[in-house]
Length: 299
Image (cartoon, rainbow, N blue to C red; front, side, top):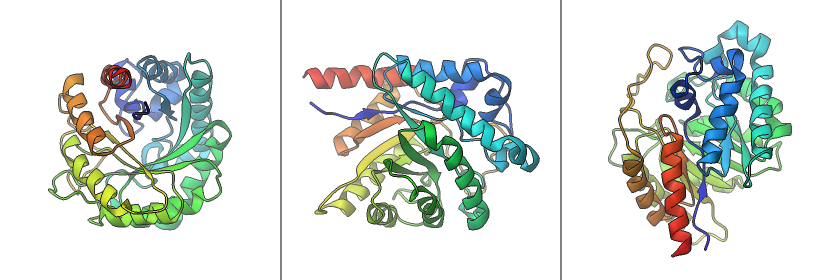
C-alpha cells in the first residue's frame, strides 16, 4: 500500500547539532567551506533514519549568507560541491534515495519585501546550473510570494526533472497564507498551470500546515490531473514579518519525535503524500515517521 514519501529533516540545525562549524551569517554553508565531511554525516543520518529524498545543502550558497565577495568567488563551486556530496551519499545508500536540488530564497528567508526579481533570477540560475548534473528532482524552498514563484519557474523551465515548490506560510494566521499575504489557492493554481510535480509547505510552524493542505485539496478538486501535496515544518518559534535572519539564531521550540508525529498523522489524514521536516527536525523525528509509515503499510 502506498502511503507517503519521506523527506529528510533540517540540514542547518542538524549540522549544528552534530558539531559542524555553524554560525551566522554563513549558516549551513560554513560546513561546506570548513568541514564537508559533516555534510556527508548529516545526509547519512537522515538516510539511516529512512529518508527517501535528501536535499542538497545549497540553501546558504547565496549572497545573503556568503556575502557578495565570497558568493562571486565561490558560490557556484560550493553549490556544486553540496550537490556532489548528496549524490555520492545517495548512491551508497542501502535503499533508493533521490537527491533534491535546492533552490533557496535568493534575497533572504521569510521576507517577500526584500525580493528583487532580476538579482534573484541571476542567483537562482547560478545555483540551478551548479546542481543540475547531480540531482533527480528539484525543490524550490521557502517561497514567500507569487512573484518569487514566478521567477523560480522561469529558471526551472529549463529542467525536465520533477519540480516541487515549497511555500513558507505566516505563522500567526488562522487561515494559511503565504508570507506575502497572498493566498494558498493562488499558489496552487500557479504551480498547477506550470505543470509542477507538487506543492509543499515548509519552514513554518506545524500548526498552520493543516489549513494549507485543506486549501490545496479544495483548489485541486475536480482537476484532470493533480499535484502531490507535502509538508515539512520547522521547530522554530513563530517568525515575525520583520525577521532579520542574519542577526540572531532563531529561537527553537522543543518538539519530541512523538509531538511531530502527531502533526504528521494529521497532515497525512488530510491528504499529504510527501512528509519530512525543516529546521530543527532531526533524524530522530524522521525515524519516528518512518516507523509509523512501516506500521501503516503492514496494516
